[in-house]
Amino acid sequence: MYTEKKLNGIYVALITPFDKNGKLDSERARALIERHIEVGINGFFVCGSSGEGYLQSLDERREYMQFVADVSAKRATLIAQVGALTSQDAWTLAEYAAASEYDVISSTPPFYYRYSSVELVEYYKDLASRSSLPLLLYNAPHTTGFSLSLDAQIELLSLPTVIGSKHTSPDLFSAERLIRGVPGTQIINGPDEALVAGLSMAHSPIANARFHQVAYSPEPVLPGRQKI
Image 1 (spheres, rainbow, N blue to C red):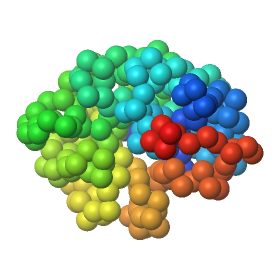
Image 2: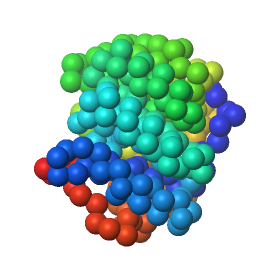
Image 3: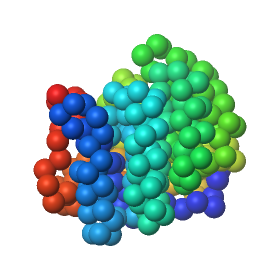
Image 4: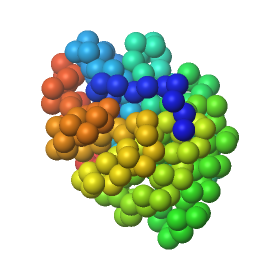
């Protein structure tokens, strides 16, 4: 397990503002990022579920990843969610994250087709071997339709470049099993409603999209593509 990069504090699952034409609204995105940094967040989780990464093309995801890197200007730790429907697209996004000087990559497991646990483990091993950045597993059963098994996660956490797991699941028992099974594991708390419970278990909290109610853009942000 990779132990050099420590994630602590609040990491915002950053939304992606679009304009009325479906293009990146750079003015509102800049105001949003600056406001979050102003109130003291520690980093951003970019192109995840709240950022609607799966509803964007590769070029759009690259554009936003670079935009966030440029605006934050190393004032916040950056995590790029590079999961995609194909391994090749995930590899491409991981390479771009490294080129844009992100700190960590993360990835949902591949979904839609019913992959075996062995295939999922091989996907993460392949991604980890191809990237120069530390890797954060991303277990999000509410969006992928299944949960990474405890055994699979423990096996992956033994890899030299895996930093931990973003646990976006109400199953805190499995998170506690990971902490005990692999001492030193960084569990990044996903669900806002589990924040207090996660803190009590020594998680490094991630506030999901609801954190925007606290650190919000001075101007209303247009809804994302799910609501257009």
